[in-house]
Amino acid sequence: MKSWLVLSLLAGSALAHAAPGNSWEDMDTLLKEKALITRIGEQVQQASNTATEQASSLVISALAFLGVPYKYGGNTHETGFDCSGFVRAVYEQSVGKLLPRRSDEQAAATQPIDRGELQPGDLVFFNTMRRAFSHVGIYVGDGKFVHSPRAGAQVRVEDMSGSYWSKRFNGARRVPLNPQQGQP
Image 1 (cartoon, rainbow, N blue to C red):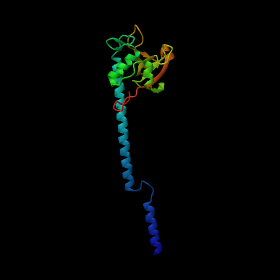
Image 2: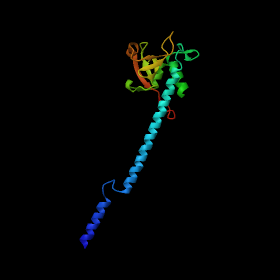
Image 3: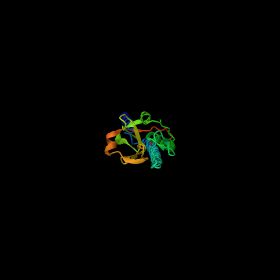
Image 4: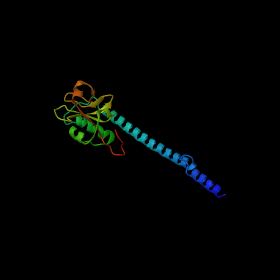
């Protein structure tokens, strides 16, 4: 009789300590975790959509200035733009971010990224005056950027793979935005 009682206790103990997934409690835990994972996934997707919308808005704002003449030191569409004045105006008007005035200062105030990580709205820098970060534009996608190039020219889109620009490419940067604004 004693051995029957011992065997029954051992069997009950084994069932109580069975592998995870064999009880309703384990299933409830799994479902709660899945719901959590789903919510996190939704939040990531929502943040991604917001960032994509902002980048699109920024690029559209930049392209709205096509044809505005270059003006050294210029920072409005009425007077014209130089390269950094153009970038500064686009960021201020489209996402409310005030960047420094000069291109080298804009490079210092932004996050370096690899060329392969470029997304629309990122900044692209070029060495056009024998010094780093002497020219800046806004990446629009597909290997192209929009910028205010030089005296006598107008805001325009150019291909980064062209020989002039590819030789002078100096780096890419991402503009940090505050948390309410997401990323470009």
